[in-house]
Length: 471
Ligand code: OOG
Ligand code: NI
Image (cartoon, rainbow, N blue to C red; front, side):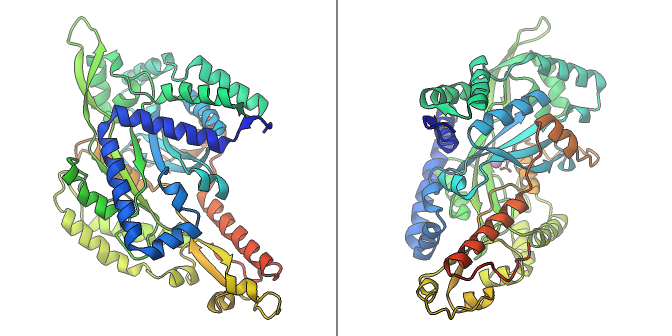
């Protein structure tokens, strides 16, 4: 990066702010939700000084008010390839592969996000990015028609692509170019109320799957939600109706716990918006489409492969016992079953650590540093922790959960109808379209943990940690 280039983290911050402003004007409830989340976060921090201190120690407090994720759905391999280049200019890289066809949704996805500690601390903006899988449309004629419609659209402005080329060639963008880049890329995410197809075509696409209509009928991948992070999702869920917003029936993910794990999410239903379809000889051109909604999330500790396996098992058992209807029937049973079943998941930080269920960031304490000179420090990690020389704090989960994501998609399809695509995970094809491999999120957490431990040992003058961590 040349000296006069804007740091990718700053381009990301500028972009995330511009996106939030655009969405606030497009979807006023998003603004209401932001206000509610800000109020809840303030109350939560005021009532929990321990949480406040932990967030400060973990560098999480500053990022909280700017933290959010968005989601888009793309139509072609080419679009995915270019969106990867666009996000790279903002320091966002594809992490994780999510196959949603198992949940009856004809897409597969990744999350573009910053990966290193410092970048996450500065602004953890992420975009859940799905690619439509036309091969899952059974009707061959419709499939060909959808492909043809998509092949004609251009979701990036010429200037946006020009500036991506420039950034790739020069290794970054100067400030004015970065501002123009943000303005131009914003166009890709903008809502267009005029469709590119006739109402009749829209209906046929819609009958194949609502999501297919959402992707194929429009000029571009409008941002479909933007999600702020809250410190108390139950309070937000409860507060929504009081501000005129009706949330979905249940919060996705784990139940409320002392030690928050992974990710809990809830959303409010998509707005019904007026659409101007292409005029057709045989029918009217006005109709409606529901696409854009609001979502809130609460993030907890990242789980190791072992912890994640336990989480998946427990959640699957709850979901097979109690099915929640989209109307919300059974949600009480679901919630109590969730709480009951998750009693099997340890809820003490110490136990989560010693059982190798979650990832932690280690650091030398004041007391530890004061004892370095005496050379009396044990080198065993557990002993260092017991003696108060090393502390450990949860590493926050930065990714998504496929079952939750499916629930979020589903709650906005407005029906219980479940399509069943046979399991057909196709990561290889996804990465080919992307033009890169997706990073494994578990590796990233394990690296962050290891780095923190190495540093703690180094500052305590202990050399390399003797004890390797299980991950
Ligand atoms: C994406 C849904 C997934 C999440 O938070 O899990 C998602 C979509 O509806 O396009 O955003
Ligand atoms: Ni989301």
